[in-house]
Length: 313
Image 1 (spheres, rainbow, N blue to C red):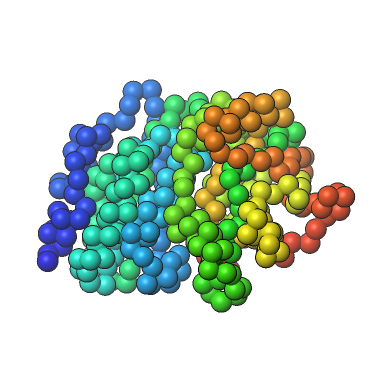
Image 2 (image 1 turned 120 degrees about the vertical axis):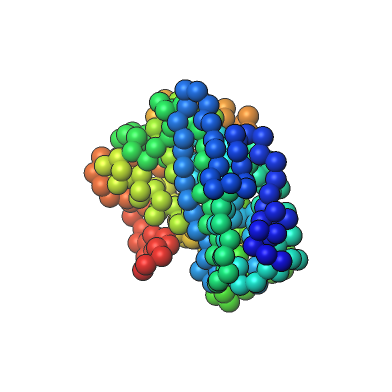
């Protein structure tokens, strides 16, 4: 099978949202009037971001999901994506399952695959995602203000717990691993939440490298500090039963949203949670200064050894 046969068979679909999609030297895209493009790129590398024997269907889902999560953090509506993929070989069974997982999630969120590249080499996956947002409504990292509440969606730490089990650092029961593994392999991008937070949140980020690391980006861009209530962190009963609550701070791979909003908007945030059927938990507040302090129930600071994942540390 040639490179172009591979593209036609597994990665060419109708692109009703594009002027021109796969098959030419470049795609032609027409943004909606009055909106700006939100563009993000993520790379997944075999042996770094996923195990070489990962289920290709789940990998197809995650390859797109991590990019959609970036758009959610910007309050952007997904529109288009490109996929660059390096493959050791043209394995038709692998390609069938990978593309099925990718396109199933793409269809859920109205994403057209409009181009990319394929080459032979070590397994690497790189998506560039394009979304749209009214320019004055984009959620940014730089808008947090002292007095803002800090919120997170869903629960934190389960994906990191599943990874710890796969790496032999902890032993989970079969049922507990199954529950956590879904969070690791099939993260759910919070697109609807990001859209709902337009005009409500002052800042937002997706939690990919760990809560403290990613909240740290908001702090740096906004020139503020933070106080976190450790006991308020939303964690599953599985995580709690293994006494691994600190994974909620620095575990990574959660792909939930962390956002800040004025305290006066708390009732609106709770209404969004109810409307979406998605737990949103207040975990602390933004303060003046630059430090992030994690406190116990008595207000005493905790010593946190790790803040999250960094590719070059």
